[in-house]
Length: 436
Image 1 (cartoon, rainbow, N blue to C red):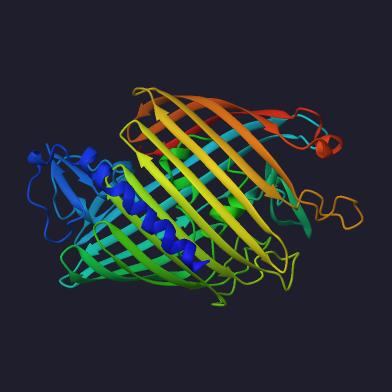
Image 2: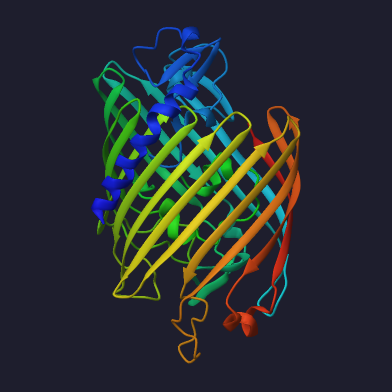
């Protein structure tokens, strides 16, 4: 599987010349690059980053960050969004959202629910003579909802009251991240870094869905969440890597077990799994990543079963349009290899109107967890199609989004008895965000 990681990153190099030419064709406007953080290029009084921070230690395209004017040291020390203030030598950033949704899906397994999701982030960063320090925290009040979470047809993963969660999305933990990142300058624009903490995210998969601009106002989590970014809340992570202006390579040791049902506390850290991730960003609007992880016993209901997961993703972002195409293969040990594809996009037509969409294709063998069911452990490939609209209103320093989405599904006839002939669903939502 490591060879796939190498091939994926090597193939990305083919895109580099054209992407660089497209994004840097106005380089005659470029001012000198900051010697302390040369991932930033000052263009026409606006700082354009070659890359921006995703969840954990991951990267996103530079165009997913709008830094405003100038290329000051303070501006180059953080990813914008939310509120920022200086406290001595520390840059403090607060960001977050609360979102209320009502979802309703048809069919025998369909369900409806009014629920709320939330996330709050507080980050502190400061530069030093030898590098940079970041203190990162992220919290959610989702543990206040029922352990069974909320309806998400054809999703699976984790448990509620000892039973497998199927056709539902579990709530996130109170502590989503409590971590530190320390960067050490080793060359022009290049650092060696350490990242980790009792609650953190290993170097595996793309940035988690709630941090991607391509899913900015989408009210529904991907049904492929447990193929791509289910490790975004992990109890015990240590990551080491090298970060350069156009690439990053990193490796992690972490706890393989997913969070348990007690979501208000912090679970015991453990380092029994590992991963490696390579990221390449040829230009501010492009980013490619490939990663591989060997995960020990991720699911509580499958003791003794490990997982070898490979992911690859391509991200594209302009000031108005963000998109991602991703592939994942998780090899159960012992067991089959289950693959998934995900394509999503978010298009801000103007300052107030947004269209978004997502298509997911996945092979899943967890639709029938009852061991006495004749379809238990049978895998089925299905596809979800989702499209939606949001009206955005600025309420500085907040932004409000009001919208909804429709979903339909393509599935084998063998699932008709469980899901109906043509299941569909909708979600309406209001989302209040601090910052963009």
